Structures are given as C-alpha cells and as structure tokens.
Length: 434
Image (cartoon, rainbow, N blue to C red; front, side, top):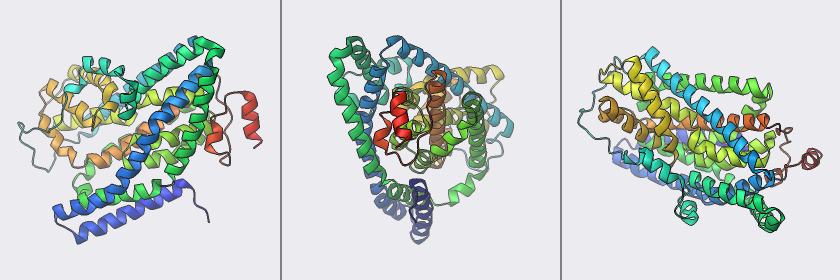
C-alpha cells in the first residue's frame, strides 16, 4: 500500500512522540535528555535548512512571473487592496476572539504554580518591534541579503517592484519572464525532493520536544493549553465559515487539501516548512499562480491568525496571574497595539513572545510572566502555526474568487511542477485532461 504524504507525516509524528517519551523515561536527568534531544533536532534542523534553501528562489520566481503575467498594473493594486482588507479583518477577529475567551475562561486565575518574581527578565529583545524599525525593515538594503536571511516580506517588496517594471516593459522583458518561469518549475521539482524528507523531520521534531520536556508539562499546564486549543478550534470554525460565505461548499475541499501543510507546520512549528506545499495545494485547488504567489507570501507577515489570537489570550492570562485588572478601555487599547506591532512579527525570532513582551510593559504587567508559558510555548506554537497556514490558505482562495479567477480543482495525479502553468483557460483544460 502506497501511503500519502499526510499519512507518513502523521506516522512520523506519533512515532516521534512514542520514542521521545521512552527517551525521557530512560534519561530523567534534564541535561542528558537535552543532549539526546539535540541529536534528534539535528535531523529537523537539516530539513528546515533545506526548506530555507528553496523558499527565497521559489518566492521570487513564482511571484515575479505571476505578477508579470497579470499585465495590468492596476490589477496588482486591486488584488493588494483586497488582500490587505481580508488580512485586517481576519486579524481583528483573531485578536478579539482571544480576548473574549481569556475574559470568559480566566485561565490565569487559580493558577497552582509559583509566580516568577516580577523583576525577573524574560531575556527577549523587544526593541525590534518599534514602528520605525518595522517600516524601515520593509525595504531591503540588498536583495542578496534579503534572500540570504530569508526575509520574505523584503523579498516580496523587491519582487513587486521588479514585476511592475517587467509588466511595464511588455515584450522586451519576455526573455526574463521565460527564464524565471523555468526557474519556478525547477524549484517546484526541488521542493518535491525536499518534501520526501518531511516525515523523518517530523519524527525528529516530536522526539526532540518530548525527550527534552516530557509529557508531564502538558498535565501541569493542561487547563491553559486545553483552553487555548479549544480557542483555536473556534477560530478554525470562524475562518471556515468566512471561507464558506465566499467559496461555498468548496471550502471543505480546500481544508482537505491543506491538511498536509497544516500537519507539517504543526509538527515542526515552522511556517516556512509548510510554504512550498501550501503553494502547491492552493494551485491544485484552482488558485492561479499569479494570485497564490502574490497573496501567500504577504500572508506570512500580515495574516498570522493563530499567532494573533495567542497574543491577546496569553497577555490577558499573564495579567490575570499577577492580579492586574484591565478595564475595557485598556483591553481595547491592547488590541490596537497588538494589531500594529504584530504585523512585523514574521521577521522576529520567537515572534509571538516578543510581541507579547513588548505589549505587557505598556500596561504595567510584569514581563516575567512570560516565564510561565515559555516552557510550553513549543507545544502552543505548533497549534498557532498550523492555524496560520489554514488562515492564509483561505485568504488566498477568497482573493482568487473575488477576482473571478478561481479555477477547477486539479487531480492529485498532476505533478506539482505542471500546476504553475495554470494561467489560462486553455492551460487549465489541458491539465484537466492530463
């Protein structure tokens, strides 16, 4: 029997949990467990480096070719406006949902854990979240540097300028477009090779986490984590409902298609690891490459729904734990601050925690409260990263629908590198008959 990639990833995740639990039991000493986990993490690190290796050329080639094929510069602005409109709406809903659930469940009250000293430092750098830093960070000093550091937002900005210039030149730039089109096909083929390693990387990632932290931490923080994951389920339902209003019953087919990148994102807690597969599945769903390659990279900086919900939920959790009572006005101010500061989080290590740390100080909430959740942040990051993939997949499909360019779903038999040619009705018909 030939298993699908989703099945292999699930097998790898369950096996990794079992092996990690066994290693944690055999090596109860924290230092020994950390050393053993380090060997597992080596495999995951190699896989993530492979993903980072292909993300930049994949984003540039698919985005430039896609936007250049639009031809109409006005279409770029129109699609960009629709995309940002959806992103802002989804971000607002995610933030409000996190706040409502935190106020309803009050997970910080009755916490049977010793509170860190209010003067303790979380060790997180928050200066990079200022508005000035974010705006200047949008534009790359060098596209080579942006590619080397995988700054997706900077790559998108450069690619947008490059694409508009190509579109304005018309036939003079056909040679460049053809070259980048071939590069895109090659990168999708490379992506296929890299994804074959994904189940092994998932196994190693789960084995590392469970070996190092054990499953006991899930019991200690069971209520907090359980409520957060219930909140994520609620967010999923809201996102799917919003998608249903635009896409109709097809939204369920979309959710089924993106199971694999969501599972990959969940098990590795890395959005980058899911990007190539998400782009492929969106094109398989019927999203034209020119829209998918434009909207999806933007979503990695502006539409992190799971992370947004976590920011308000965790911030209010810490405030409740330290007995800091926030009025409705203060909570609304917190929502506004998070709406702005979170838009640059994709470029910051341990992004959600850094955003929360920057927000807590403005409401006299001890930053040390982050120490309460840092121990389980890896498990929480898994859920919010998978949610980010779902949110961006629905957003991209909705924009394609609004543009009247959402095509028919393509069979799994069509290879990934053939999907990128779906830019005209003729190409679509050819693939349907493949």
